[in-house]
Image 1 (cartoon, helix red, strand yellow):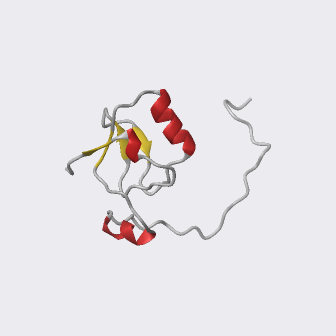
Image 2 (cartoon, rainbow, N blue to C red):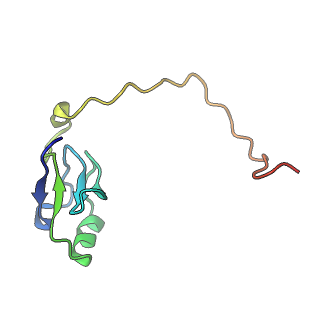
Length: 95
């Protein structure tokens, strides 16, 4: 298991991205997904909730190339055809 590092709220600036998810101090609830840029509302939430620190096992990434050291994603299955959804279908039990 990777070792977590502390990230202080002052380190979270608008647009910053991390190579791994950033979690609240409980290590369970995610604050910011890997590769997703922090937005103004993320920063406001940290202040409003008085969060002392966050944790991550990643690092700040400067560009997409920095994601090469992150675990490779599993291959996604290609979809041949998308079928339309029947909007008139019933939900629940049949009558």
